Length: 213
Ligand code: AMP
Image (cartoon, rainbow, N blue to C red; front, side, top):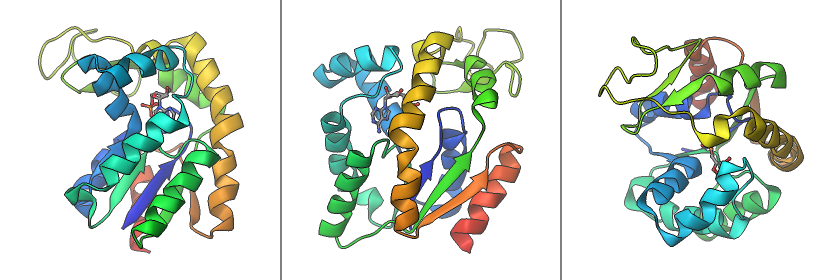
């Protein structure tokens, strides 16, 4: 089962992918998570990516395409994968099609989680993260003690790209560079759109209906 979760930043792709892993027994592949790990480790790729990420800009296609090319060859992807945050441009999608063709594979479903821009700003500015990997939300999933991680007690931080100025850039980039993928995958007859405005459980049920469909 080769799946892509498509949607604007803040649509809940990461949250849904994490719920799907257990049900489907295939890995989530998040280019955002991979890039953040590279930034944290201070690798050359991380240092290059950081300046784009902090500004809310997309990291160059050549970098992320290379990441995915390597990652999809790993053993845990043999039975499928859930791509979260990739592809984000038509060039990335075309490269993915080429990689999968070479491996004799194809995308089964592209699930587009639709959320209006007006909801996304509130969702993204409310997100607070912990270095342990936990994530909280001031409105939807607050930590028990404000600013402190429930799991490990560390101080929560806001991603630089979840600050308002960077979010505006991310939303403009989404509409200019990523939304065209809706037509790209629509033409390939693998696109299914679901509303992303319900509760996480409702959105999950809609995704699983597509996957099991
Ligand atoms: P995310 O966690 O998916 O919102 O990604 C965080 C940031 O990582 C994005 O704002 C981009 O700067 C970068 N990034 C993640 N995935 C990609 C991608 N497929 N192409 C380009 N940049 C990406």
